Image 1 (cartoon, protein in one colour):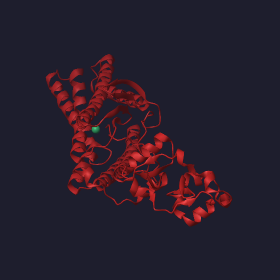
Image 2 (tube, rainbow, N blue to C red; image 1 turned 45 degrees about the vertical axis):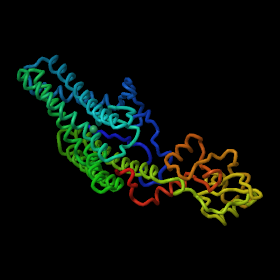
Image 3 (cartoon, rainbow, N blue to C red; image 1 turned 90 degrees about the horizontal axis):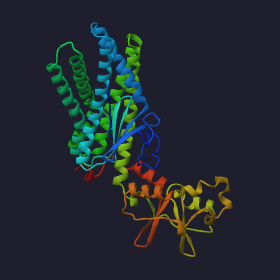
Image 4 (tube, rainbow, N blue to C red; image 1 turned 180 degrees about the vertical axis):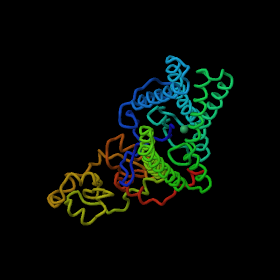
Length: 407
Ligand SMILES: [Zn+2]
């Protein structure tokens, strides 16, 4: 049942221009917006429980207990419910170990793991970045299902070694089967499931194109999610177990939504890391005079609404004017205001080199709480980088990541 993904499903969402900061903020709240409960830290990894996890823990315990009660009328209620509680506790420990499996591999390959969270649909290991090579992604993704498979084998061995019909045998058989189910379900080849990551890694290696591989894994993920939603709805309407059907439908919706968000997030991140400041910055716009009115500026440099311009006074650089400053004045008042009143003065402009990645430029903007940077090389001002020009560059970028990230 459980699903997981290694990149958070938050961040910029589809169909709208990316909002920066694009680097996902550290998620304090859970996947459904609620506050997570931190249960501890091990080697820098935070272990969290999303409130929704208690719902699924209760439900699984209840379903397993009801099943044991029906199939084993000879058991005392104490045996039934203690067995169910032990079963669901070991099951969620198994899910946790699945995530630990991903995390151990990620750490071994040089990535950081921020947190592992258990929630309604399973577990999530949140990594601090994306694997840089297809091989790394392949190995990290495979590690989780491999742990689930080994746990399944382990529980089935316990089952064989114990007395048939007794709680230990019944609980271990159930755990063996559900862990196998977790391994198989997670290997379905759509994002954000592990199988989607494996699929993407294989495509990435084969095509040498990270973005196309990401798009394909995302498409399959959306398809799988929609199929699960449809199946769940049919089950909920026609079947007896309406709650189970509704749960599957909700899970399908969550998978589709995550597949979409993860795809956009991954492609955006890849472009921000591969494009440079010089690819996005407005370099070459004629500078304007600080006594010009805003109306004159917009007329002569239409691109100022995205890219921004340098502002001169007697030939000396005194500041920059960009979309954020223009937005402070209603268009109807443009004719009545001089640039110097609204520009960001030189002393407050933060500098960035044209060879920096857009990713680090956005991080700098966030850190300094500014909406534009002065692009400067060896003391020579070249132009302005605004958030809007970053968005434009990212949206215009050709559809493939550079060879450096697909090695
Ligand atoms: Zn996994």
